Length: 301
Image 1 (cartoon, rainbow, N blue to C red):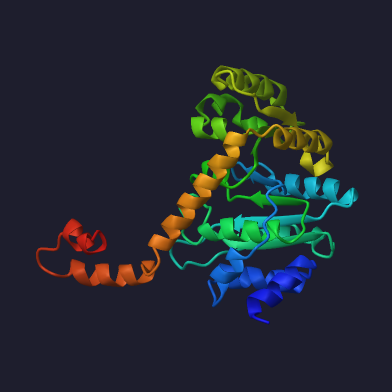
Image 2: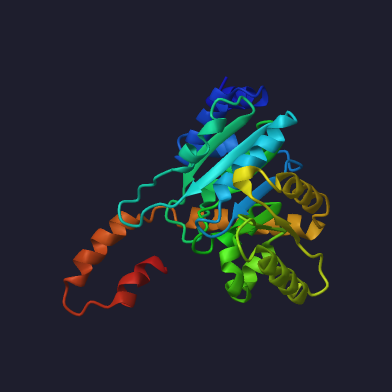
């Protein structure tokens, strides 16, 4: 039996050791990773739920509360926590494992932290592939928490069936400046820490903004929560279920297109090392008559 067959058999029987090993192989592109991916029995009916929003909005606390809600009813939950990769040393803190430590010993929860691997938007091609591994491993729900910076709020729309945007009342006066891309991709808005002053006004302004930019399409749900007290979690769960049930067929095509585009981009960039490029650029810059575009032309052939 080949290694791929052995791992696939383990994944099919919900063996977490096999599943974790498969993630490592795919994430690091070890021998046989393409064979493994091409033979995955991916369950497209498993909802992928993306949580995004600015740092400090309480995404991790909200995700923790939502996980507790799901596991109480016996659901198996897979979590992918995205952490930013440093542009200087290419390392990653992977701190979400610490913030979700209460679920470590729960047999119905599997958490994996992934680095952005230099992706400007925070969603690397590996996130897509590993998400499909989760979909083949018998989980009832897959949660993806983004870094909440750069373009990750928009990029999550290319992966998740339901996008949850987490905000806080302090953003009240700035709601009009929310990027239109985020408004378009969010299926559920959560106003977290809604026990703070200004929460009702913020929700009112948000509802007006959603109405203005809806263009006749289905309006996203708006939920108030205090995640630290587990208030609003049940309402959030209901809004997510409704958004998944009512997901238009056109979104399935959009997800496949975005996933395809990202994976093809990743494949075409193979063999180009950022670190090596830095070394070569440093050498080229020392030469007389250095021209940036002439130097790059070798990559444009």
